[in-house]
Length: 71
Image (tube, rainbow, N blue to C red; front, side, top):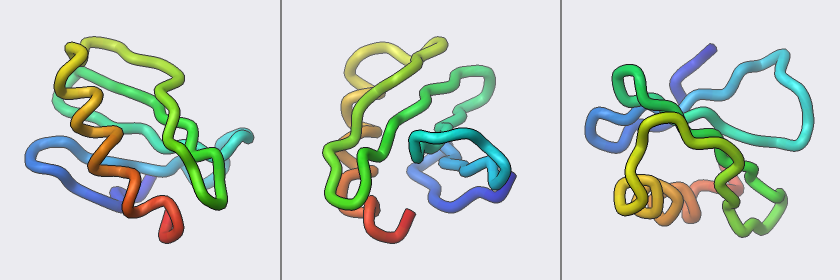
């Protein structure tokens, strides 16, 4: 699973053999959030959250928005 982006300590990864819909996994330590990309133009949608509080997960979604086309 390659890391495709980093935001501080958060790694954003795509599992190459993963299922549809297109989505990314964001990890910070043991915390994980999964965002559906809703390609090609978004918007990013939180699908799963394990351990992130609301403010950091919202910040992460906003940080991902400009990168949708490259993901």
